[in-house]
Length: 139
Image (cartoon, rainbow, N blue to C red; front, side, top):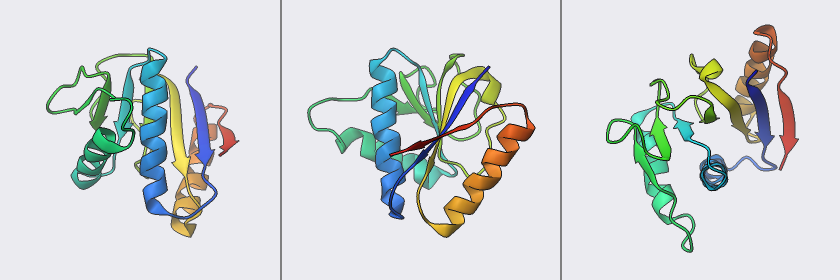
């Protein structure tokens, strides 16, 4: 069964979620996992694409937008299904992915913004209703 984790950031800074997604994508890739970062819109996709180029000067994270290369080690997209099953999904969208079962692991990144907390609490409940056992991880 897919492992679901909610990584909880200590602050409310919106950019913190994007940086955490890049760090998690880098770790997943280093451990040999296919990584899919699911964004809520094309603007967020572009932001993550740019951030992955620059967030860590000492190590390049091979990535691409889904429409440019859906087989990249780290793929940035929205609603597209993964091309590699059993990888890592980093969900930055406020909704659950329709492809959750195709991943071995799903990470939701939560910050302390009131709207984000509400969305993530709802998602936590939805995962439970669907038979998953989501876990909370404090960062």
